[in-house]
Length: 91
Image 1 (cartoon, one colour):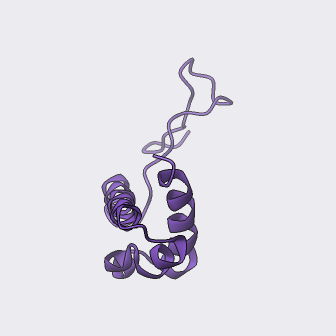
Image 2 (cartoon, helix red, strand yellow):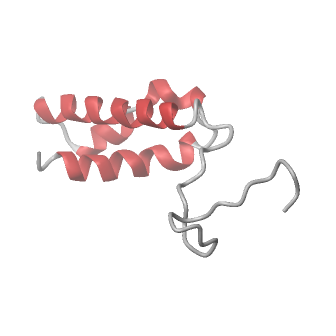
């Protein structure tokens, strides 16, 4: 193995076993950015649910402040909101 490179190995040192997921590259603060994004979705969806709002309202309004922080926002935010709404409506 070249110096300065690292092989992801599982807990037993076996390279065939999955190790921890690597930190994202170029994602708004990596893990912290994702946590902030999903916390924002959850908070805003809970507020909509508390007012008796529906999934269409959530899809159209939730997470919009995050738009400029994520390259694929337009591709995934609606799906993320839909999935989160379905889970949170049963809380």
